[in-house]
Length: 63
Image (tube, rainbow, N blue to C red; front, top):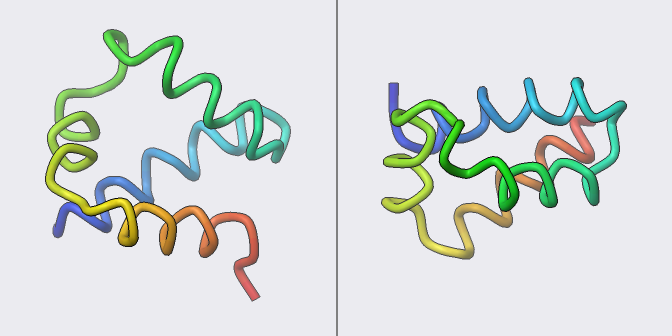
């Protein structure tokens, strides 16, 4: 899996757990950073801001 796929997969899980609220999802990522899987943390570090934004858009607007 690529970093982008790892990042997206974990972000989707968090998004679903946060009742499809992207604001809550972003807040969760920042407040629970130390508890997130290392694969997600590593993928997040490897992606550019633009790539992260693309993934977030894909999660919010899947159609």
